Length: 248
Length: 240
Image (cartoon, rainbow over the protein chains, first blue to last red):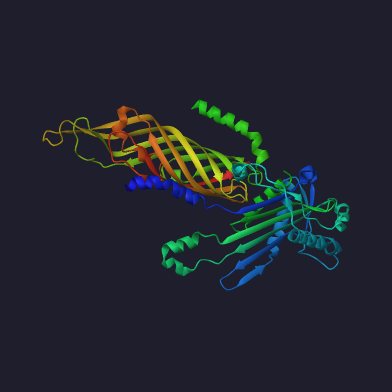
């Protein structure tokens, strides 16, 4: 009787544990991108950001780590080279009052992109295919939302295409969250203690937004949530994948 | 066996063009070579695995395992022996070699395989050698004239099969070093000839399962499958 019960239950239990899977990914492209993706060879990255939020039981600590930020910039450049992209980075960690390009161009464009993304709505093209196809197509390639109408920025930035040698500019960043540890008192009830220990205490967000200043449109937007810490070995493959997806 | 290997090679060649166009792997690398630490630690054996990432969230695996185990049975058995009833006793040596083929489905959509949690299925086939002692009786065990005989038995090239289904987590450090932990539900069985059925009936759980035997069998004179839980801890390297 017990044996039969175990035999029946063992597989669903394993499947249930196995289903405790990971993060999320939102990948959106302008429908014009497919015609121009081969021309993307150089991107100017507008000072990538790395922010850490440590959420305590009674306080919230926010830190913009210079060390991690510099490492992120370095890795973006290195990974870009590996994927065949030339990435030019405007690093805001060592700025002086004389950095006119940064204050006149970079900051203004970055703000314009952020405003466009947060304030403007997009029109998505209708997804083709039946439910099953849509649901399981991510085994081979990620689900991509295609925009019919993309967010736009001001045409005043079009001069930057000639000045920096490329019309493509990107805003990238990593936000790392750390949640509080489980209460030691929960171990007084062992199943509760074990469950709280199994919960994720880290969440890492990665975003990458690319604009074409000549067409004044946002051409690519990507947002990923990973329930893991912001280690280099976790972030690097995501950046690599992000650059590859941009040109696929 | 040769036909199966030929089919695997043809399959790999057909999949190669898809390999690099549809998925990015881990920083552009798609092949991992791994070894299982559980085999040298617990069964004086070796296990080598090649994992090929064929789609963004799907990989194929081919594993070779070699095990040398000793199954410790009761030295005297049940003691009730009669004509026609044999029982394996003492220490039995079990030596097996398998090839396991399978696939992995990675659960995390935000990053491409081979990093993160996964579910997997493996089907294994191979050969095993068994050698040990057996006891039998000369008459009715209840009579005072009953005599117990002991003799050595060996069975070679017994076909063995197993399947594993489970889940695991794979981590990658320093861009190339891979750690892979998995737990699986396993069913293993021997395909023995009638000659060895009774001797090997109590040995089927010593093949394939490395952690807990979930379900056994109640004896009998034919070999029943063994069910259990396998634990695997693999280390490896991303080759290219």
